[in-house]
Image (cartoon, rainbow, N blue to C red; front, side):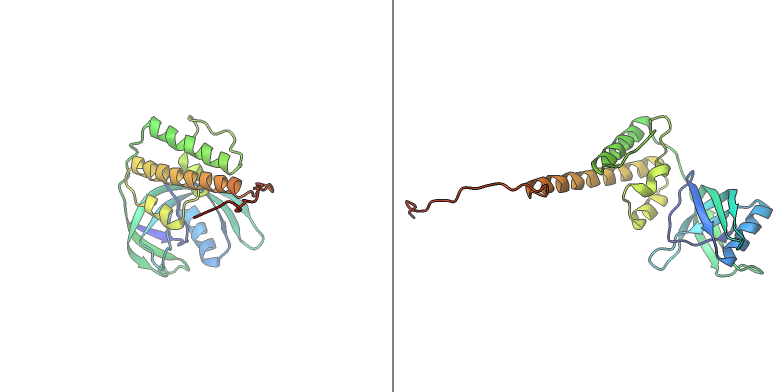
Length: 212
């Protein structure tokens, strides 16, 4: 499959809603072509100087067109792919293209695991004193918050390459558990070293009768 390519140092996931601001001429052209032909485009992840995997995005809506031709668009993630060949410039176009193979993906998650992850996210946000509104078991979608739980780009990239949703959830669960433990230790340390402005008072030791 040949896809127009929009390389970014970002990871997007199947089912994720993606908002992009388009300002480069080559990508203005790409979006115009995608809209006219109703094809999807690929966002290969640029990481450590390489591009191997990425996500196919479907253009859903152009929210705003600026006088300069810049665009605000909404896309949705579809499939994960691996790049087989890459053209820096597609024939007759300004943008790149690549031939890809789509990776298998299996949604094998169970409700209890999703609930574990949701509970950990709520706990994490509570420790950071960040409000999290309207999130329930019924409407919870991990990809709504995937970029807001402290994952590094390399961790997100590792997630993208996983074929099973359960594997992704277990990875996220382990990350959240570790992060929460670190935050608890930090908060405990703050209390112990008196970062709240209070200091413990100790009576001086009298060594007058001390013998070895």
